[in-house]
Length: 177
Ligand code: FEO
Image (cartoon, rainbow, N blue to C red; front, side, top):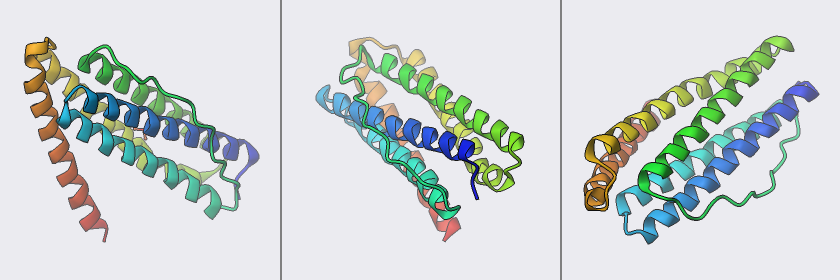
């Protein structure tokens, strides 16, 4: 059984993961428009992942007899200054999500909710991986250079990162099956 305080906090996390899904979908659309197919594929996959993160919490709340609430759709930005700026925004959003997960973990201790603490461990690890991934992408963009003449190389690089992430995800699913 969830405390009201924990239920509210988990519903806020649903909102944050849902917004991430919409923000990354908007980024995918911008990338498509800019002819950056590799980046678009990457952002579409990230958007799907965030929806899965949102649903995982949604189902958890229902499983422990709480009430999961569908959040309002907040419109994300539709345009981005550059690929580098876009990935900087992704990194900033992921840091915000990490902070929120850490606050949820702290709340678990406050209200003695060790079931939710256990549930959140997956998110703690996921956020460590997400932040590391975004940092490595920003490092690569910095190395290649963000000028218009380098966009083709950046896009190819992100395409490779996306393929590696898809392969890792498939291996993870196989191991869980
Ligand atoms: Fe689910 Fe990347 O935050």
